[in-house]
Amino acid sequence: MTKTGLVYDDLYLKHNTGSNHPERAQRLTAIINMLEGAGLLDKLLHIEPVPAERSIVELCHESSYIDRFQRAVESSAPFLDTPECPLSPATFETAICAAGGILAGIDNVMQGNIKNCFCAVRPPGHHAERSKAMGFCYFNNIAIAAKYLQKKYAIERIVIIDWDVHHGNGTQHTFEQNPAVFYISFHQNPLTCYPGTGRASETGTGKGQGYTLNFPMPPGAGNQEYFQAMETVEQEMKKFRPLFVLISAGFDAHTDDPLAQIRLTTEGYKTLTRKVKGIAEDHAEGRLVSMLEGGYNLQALGESVETHVQALLEG
Ligand SMILES: [Zn+2]
Image 1 (tube, rainbow, N blue to C red):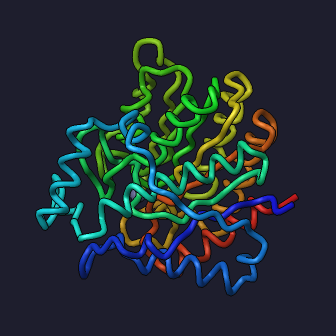
Image 2: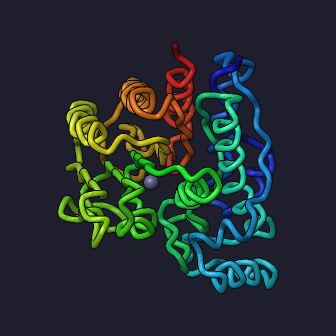
Image 3: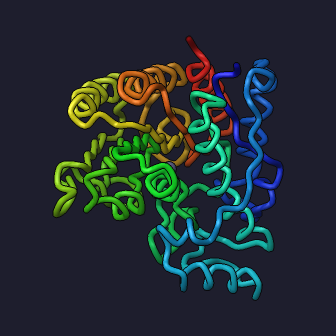
C-alpha cells in the first residue's frame, strides 16, 4: 500500500494573479518538477480534486461572501476585497477545488487508502476570514478541512499546526472559541510581519481558552527556536490527544524566502515534519493531511516540499 497521497491537478495553475505577484502558478510547477526529479511522484497515491460542496464551504464562510466572490469573478472585477487578492476568470473555480482537493485527501485517509497526504494546492487559505479575502487567500482551506472532519467523520479533537511564516488569522478566528480544534501557529513576530495578529497572549476565548497557542518568532530565528517550541507542542498534545493532525504548510519561513526574515533550512522543514508526524503517530494512528500555504522562493519551496514529502513517506 502506498502510504502517502498527493493532491494535485493542473487546474490549480489556472488562478492567474498577473505579473509580479509572489503567489503564482509557477510555485506548483516548481513543486511537481522537484517531486518528479526526486523520483517521488511514483511513490505517491495521486488524488484528483473535486469542487468542495457549497454546504461545506458555508461551514466557514458566509453565504453572501461566497456569492460576492463568484459575482466579482463573473463581472471581471480586478480583485476581491484587497488588491493582493487579484481575480482571474478561473479564480473562483480554482479556490473551490483547492478546498475540495483537501477534502478528497481527508476522505482517502479516513477510508484507510493512505496514512497521510500532501495537498499541492493554490490559492492558499489561512488568512481568509469568514467574509473577507486577505493575504492571497479566498477560502480558508484548512478551516474548511477541520469543519469537514467534524461534520462528516465526527472527529472529536483536531489539531491544526500552522508553520507558515505569517500568522493564520482566519484559522485562529474560526476556532478560537472551539475547544475541539486546537490551533497552533509558528510565525514571525506580528510586530514585524503581516498580518499583525498572533501574539503569545492570544490563547483562545470562552470555552476555547487554552486551545490556541501562538509562537511569535523574532526575525532571524531558525531551526533551534522552532524545535524548542515543538517540545512545548508535544507536551500540549499529550494532554489534548488529537485524533487528526492538519498542517498549514507554508514554506515561507525558509531562510531564502523573500517575504520574511525567519531562517528555517530545508533540513529544518524535514525535522519539523518528522516531529508533527510523530504527534500524529502517537495520538491519531498517523492520520495527517498537510496543505500548501505560502513559500515564494521557487527553489527553496521545491526543495522544502520534496523533503517534507520524503519525511511523510518514511517508515
Ligand atoms: Zn505566508
